[in-house]
Amino acid sequence: MRINANEDVMLGNGTMITPLCYKDIYFYKNKSLDNLDVKKVVYYMNKKSVAFDYIDNYENLKSVLAIFENDPLYYIMLVLENNEGKTPLQLAIDNNSARIIELMLNCLLKLGHFSISKKIFHNFSSLFKMNLRSFEKYLNSCYFVTEQMKSINKVDLKSPDTIRD
Image (cartoon, rainbow, N blue to C red; front, side, top):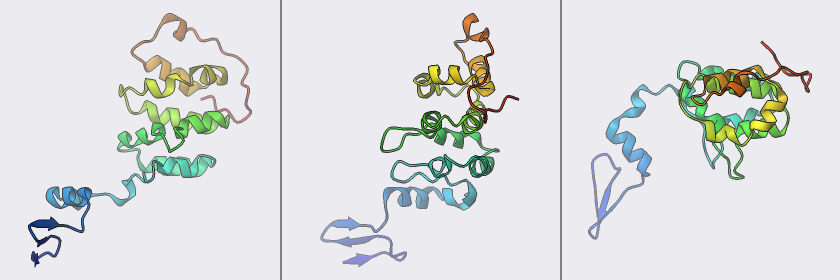
């Protein structure tokens, strides 16, 4: 049995053994962690992002999402599915949490033309009924904007916690 100087690779009986996972080997090779901002590490373990932990608490979710403000690509975590096939956005819609949905959609709008239409498409009818300002902004930013989408009529809000900017 031979062990290299860093003690991260062993060779025995013609087989290389390493206590590292592929991710560790990749980071050792590319040294990507040297410039890593610990605050921006997206918690995504067992198919669950950090957004799931704060789905019922508007202020805490807002604080967590503010960390990613300078790098909005992290907002994609809002449409990543968990083990049950639900996204944080879907759970907020199921809970009829208008303030949280507004917050999430405003963050997703910062992704620019990064297409998340498939993730939102299944919830169009629910989002139309909620009459959220951020959903209007989302529809106006889509490539497929139609005249019907531009002429969404304003209706009375169904939820008292809905925010209309």
